[in-house]
Image (cartoon, rainbow, N blue to C red; front, side, top):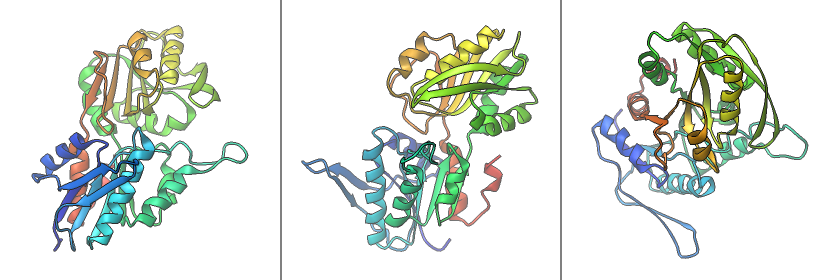
Length: 311
């Protein structure tokens, strides 16, 4: 590209942004992201970005609304500073679970957020493991949806080397992701049939597939309150699994999640650093996805293909 690559970050996960910049062998851009006394977001870009290829790294993790507003206002500031192209790098896309109407008179918030990001001035979006792939269609700008599957495969192939294990999808919605993982690892697939009683409350019904005398690996895109995860592990053990591991891209870990994981029968929970893990537990293993995101940024900047990073 004929214009300069620059990377900026809000306050959501600056350590992750610094790791991405380290991969790119560059410094994180200087920007002031603070609050006025009434709580309004105050943003000032502290360096010239006219004509530059700018990437704003900001997961919309808890507090979601605070971090979303930071992202939108940073994009607006960069647009008004005449940046050449603005890419919103959203490792974790908040509101992604509200991607359709599941009952009368409810919003499709994932679409609303997409409209806000586009209206703010983003020219492109780079994200990781969207909760629902069709969210890409909510945007009228290019969206690159990376996956953490290759990173999990690299770790699990060493962690469970020589172990007879089965990949488990915790619900019907995650079957495609689990099937891809199982195919790459050449292991069988199982599915947990569950019914959600209300938001963040799930009742596990039964296990579809053979998990008896095997190590079970639950694969999901995120762990929120860990209620589904813990109940899924209990169901697998009741069906004859000898041990249960879990892997999920986004460690949302809200409410009682940490306590539930710590007191559960799960051997290990593997996550990535798309969201900061605020409480360290021996059971939680954090893998870095910064190099993958950094490579995607490099390829986008140089107008190279990023499709090989998706699988």
